[in-house]
Image 1: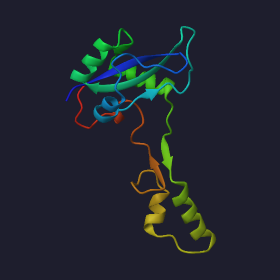
Image 2 (image 1 turned 120 degrees about the vertical axis):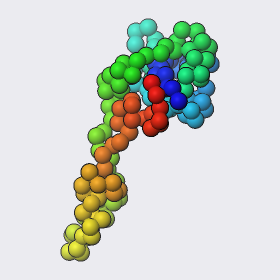
Image 3 (image 1 turned 90 degrees about the vertical axis):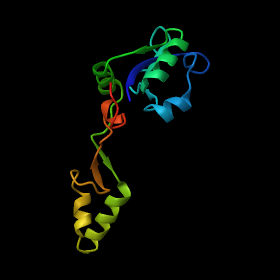
Length: 146
């Protein structure tokens, strides 16, 4: 399925308003969700931005209904936007799992292989793991085309 990366202008008012035709359900259900700018607030023109991606038919309908406030962007632009405006951790950490391991070590209990694997980000075991959803492309379904 072909996905279209989209950049969305949100207007400052009493409440932030999304463009006409905005359907949060569609964006969450069929797209990758809304990813709001985490670095910048509203600019001097009263806009704040977000990026998403939707299947082509839904993206086209959203662009038409948005009255110029939603635009298609390239994958490279979306990836650059994520790096600049949506900083994400390289690793995810399970505090509870690491506390369990520390308690075992403090009590002199031998760590299991699973405990040791939890300390290795390259192992796919809860503890310290690589964030596989970092960036724009990694949020798309595996079979998505751009």
